Length: 252
Image 1 (cartoon, helix red, strand yellow):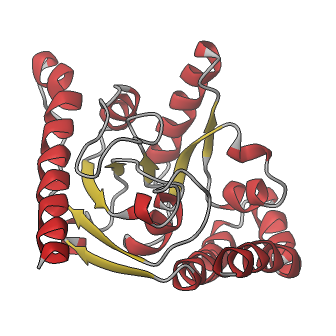
Image 2 (cartoon, rainbow, N blue to C red):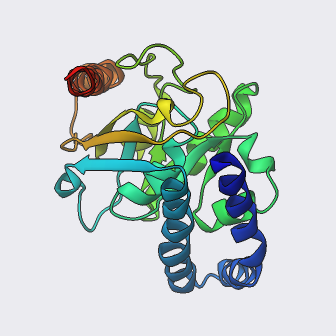
């Protein structure tokens, strides 16, 4: 029943908010960024936040003070579940552009809202298109929009506390734009959706740690090359810590 209610709200909000979306798209076409941002900042967290509540998600976030103020950045987070998307839209300082797989951009209405967010869609099967999308995301950051990316490239489906290898695309976005990288560690989201191999909602607790930013300007070639492994190790350490803490609490 929880899953049915969740999907009913998911699509119901998108359908009945069409006049708001239409207003935002018109503002986007005429370059009225203030109106676009006002619509995004009000309605996207409202929609995504209600999705979390309907699923029974309890979120604990630390480190919001680490998010750079007054300048765009590139958030790099580990990826465990589709639920990471509403988490990123609601638990940072504001909803930001997502670098998303192309399949998401084919979902009716969802794509239009993502256009308001200035999201970028990557076709993982097309290397040239992927490069164009990375260039587009870089321009987004240069123009003042922060970007969220999951550098593993897909959801990690192993045991809690693990994660996949960080690919280099996210880091090229930041280094070419001269923007800081903000590592984000997420634990517990897979148990809410996909934890048992099925798309049914289960209440659960998610822990998010927003870590101090890593500046990319002024780094040597060797330091730039080492960034993916450096941030992967950093995020992995915190994911392992959070998983161990969650396991200890459940055992007690």
